[in-house]
Length: 315
Image (tube, rainbow, N blue to C red; front, side):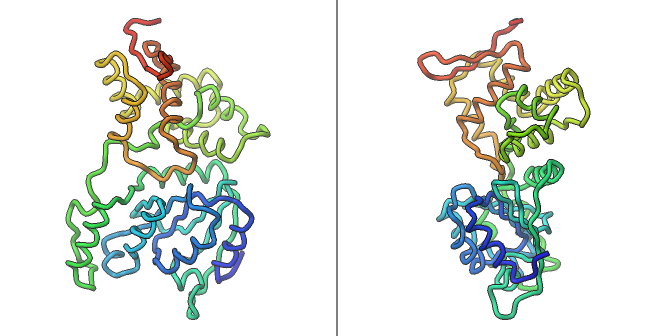
């Protein structure tokens, strides 16, 4: 165990070059966040998850001023009303778990700091399963949500235990999330990991991607290759997002790559995925899975642009 101030071990670890992927803390103050991010080696992959319950907003324990600060630095912010954990997850699959919120007192930046403790852990596949469950119900903050929350704070008294937030405070969610899409390159590569997850050579990101797919497609342990393929086929084909896309493709008969990208963005809510997300790469991965589990679907590259087709009756 590492006793506070907890900012010190995190700052020292950041100097090792391990990239911070996810910062999860129920309460975040702007002053503490600014000081902490000064010690990171870059912000390109960081995603921040906080709580922002209505009572947190009005009481001031959740500082909405972090949104414009993060937006200026192109760091996405997400809310999850159920979190109480404080976790800092790195690209190596190491994580720092602590009792301290990212506030001046919680992190030990102020003279009158809280007594906090933490420690570094190596995340297992079971840990990632729980993290993906958290990610699934996290919602990205945008300018519209920020302004609604700001107006709500201004309209409420400071004692807010009985305050009733408006029903649209956090906006209307989209139909699906980006985490609905498979992350592994192909089902075959996922099966290779599933059968032998301890084989040397898997990168930390490959482990995260494989665990993502095992979780979202509800794959139980101990399946044979044939059983796994059948379970993946059934789960993938029954995914509501896949069903809706297949109906679209049936209607259109063919879709250009750019049109599919646009459709995915219109339909999907962003979530704090802890692996590299690139719309072109992940759309291509989606094509691979569709071609594997729908005999009617094929794709190719006429004129250097990927096109996906529905071939009725193809065997």
